[in-house]
Image (tube, rainbow, N blue to C red; front, side):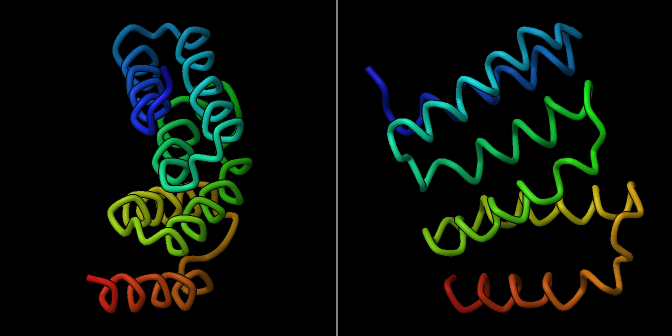
Length: 125
């Protein structure tokens, strides 16, 4: 059956296929399947971690990183609403890395948004 850990496991195994095995097609299939399971079964608490794993550790091997800034921001927002602060922190770190690496937004411009996430993480912990 499907549990909340199913899509997380799929995206984590997918990142291993991409990073270690260099099997990007299998990695992409696992990551996309994890995202689809989150969507189909409305696993909102699981979504931030699966989005971060899939966009930050799988998809960037085949597509430009600029495409992943909006999904990572979405993962942070969902995570904040669901109270999964560890996943928000992971998404935030990847978001800042991708923003910096791609030059899509200067970090000083992203700083107020990151400070808002940090305040919310501190207040919820």
